[in-house]
Length: 272
Length: 272
Image 1: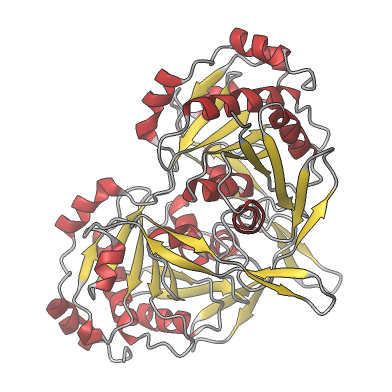
Image 2 (image 1 turned 180 degrees about the vertical axis):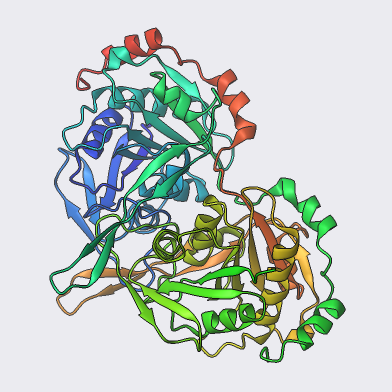
């Protein structure tokens, strides 16, 4: 059987150590193509580039591996890779290894995870990997070993329709990591604390800082798994519908029909 | 009773006609604060600004209304508004009225909807509004009337926990719109067709274009409602967990424990 084609991307940029480890981990199991941002794109969420053209430059960073630096966001990388480089769906898309956690609510801000989500929207099995260590000097060896094992599981068993994986790895040595837990995303959020400063001209500016608040005491969450020494694997979907509330709205809302709305809106003089 | 405080934002920028109509529609029902991007931010998804400082400049655009132009993304606007301007949670956050549809999968790319999602993460009732007309000359009067009615329903009944609304309005005259449908998000995606060009120096660049493909024949979707003349109201949640697949992974995956993983990863020479 042919080796599977594996698309590798990230959000820390093509020169980040995390993606080098991910390429290394995937080399043994597939034919690799790398398309990753030419500069750091952390916190870009599911942004796409609509108002500027995009560039794709071949780079020779990973020995013997076809690789391109893209001027756009992580989601742009996946879209361009599929449409302009691969011309077909790869067998797997892996994103990361991110420098820093993408557990719980962080998934929604994460370029790493949004790239994986985009691949999944396209029908490509996808996994995002993140290590709980922000530093450029982080030890990615445990994360690399788990990335390989998890990618192999995904290639072997496939993934349910419209489902991808969010994998976070604790900042521990490989032999300190206890194994894998399948988890749900913890209920958590960031509390902003903008750092307010004045520029040399006396004008205010703000740096985003904040503290992560876990509001979830469950022992089935990614936060629980990570703080107990496990790799957390959260199956992820991208249907944003709150299906369980549709009945509630149909029962509660009083104004739904044209005649009622028309009568109400006539009283609004300034609405045309 | 005091009038409710309503935070207004968008992704087309503070000078877009759509936000002017939204401010107009909200004026009758609450005290308005506007914090919106100083330039267009379409397609920014849930991006936040981590690597640059942010500016907030007071502007006098909407008569008698406190308003700020923010240098960041729509999500930055909501975070800054809460932390640095309001210093408390508003009673409602409305985002839009977007120039163009945010139905079905578009929600995930949309700055308009991501601003509303961010407000909801913060525990603020939130609604994003979009009109199915991209043009700057679009007629927003029907959309404005529906925005007012829906905001009133939300203020009257509240919203279920961690639920916000994605409201799309067909590009019809007010009296042609048939009413409101509570819907689920249609299963759909964009098929990329990058427009490939050469710059004057002979180097390639790419513009993102694509076509929207509705893969969903259901008559309970936002796409169905909109193409049948209704305003679509999709209740939205932001837990990305694919809860229904957790049992599947627990049953299927063969490698989950440390010893098995350790044995496997030892064979990977270049990891570690």
